[in-house]
Image (cartoon, rainbow, N blue to C red; front, side, top):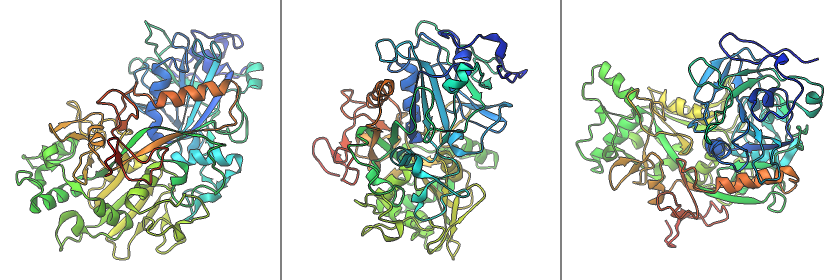
Length: 592
């Protein structure tokens, strides 16, 4: 007998009596999600920075799905809230807003960071007309995905929250390997109905139904119970246990030290494809921004017209300053954007810097706060490579963070057992404060927490590293003053801006002009396939890898290798074949 669905007054939810057993729901997204098991399921894990690219690939092209048939998204949800996706395929964000639901939620971080795309295979593909599910788990970033792929069910879990030790190779944490689940084949055959609430809307209150209009389908989203499925140990409907595709900001051998187990990744078992150049930015809070501007003005590197005390990184901050009495408050411009040197970052991430480095004043006693990502993060690995001296260490557990290759100094306070030791709070985040109290290191579990941590810090000089693709707008846009960095600001690195066209001073919404000018914080990102893939899943994986490497989507923070479009193309690389330890090199063979 079918389970009854939850009914909410504010959401349109279809009752279980509305359908017969799973038929062919070519026009019915409710049935596709709640009554049918997929014919083919592909499990992807890894970098959250590549989520927008995957989203656009799946919903804006016919690479995987037939856009003339029902399409739906099962969204992340926590407790009484769920993510509400934009209803059309032109969604610009994977987390537009949240809505209230009464669907039960799992406490594990994997399910909270998993998105499932459902539809029918595109015409002309192996899966044409058959139900296809693409599951994407971004919990803890790039190397959580790589670890799940290469180590499979053996990854285990660490007791408690947080990474726990200097060398977290013993396993993942807090249910990273658990993802939202769909109906199994057996459940669908027994006419079981998945309990879901429809959250995708076309207005503030009306739940969307799938529809097709001249190639522009409306794509509803759902929050569903049944979201603690372990794809590593249990084969989903139309799939096999394990990860079929991992997306990473840098290659497996460049993971932060101690994250992956030696010998598990090999190119023959898990072939790798470079999909483009990924950019990263250094984000600072307003307090650090103004101090850096003051330093640069004093040194003669910025004009004296850049009055530090009047410059803020977002419209929100400008408005707040005016309200507080600073009538001269103005928004940061390209001409006044300060620069941090690579040598500055070397000291900042290692905890050897003092406030003088930020402000230029030897009497400055302000605390410096470093908001960083956890060791599994590809963003953190990229930062370690460029700023902490990690080079050719092949990030496996045989070379621990405590005894790394010559020249590498781990970000200070990243261990609960080392010296100095970090502590872990109730949310599983590292924190470390130096004995002088003038340096703090926080390891947050998601990139959004780095952004909110930096922008929400008003008392210290706060900074962090964030991937450029993940932040859609680098300065405030529109009259509402909504900032992609929620109050923080990008700064130049070695004199090159990540978000301004320095020849014109205009804001580059794609955050690529700087990368084309030799902005140093860019690396070759990769897609890693499981050679054991077979059958219907191979076609989906291959279509995704090919699609991610094309410039069709023109996404922020990515320069496309091989593109013939002069505004999209990558003009620099790092050695080719994801050799990110190599120097940044221009395609005209000039090394930087």
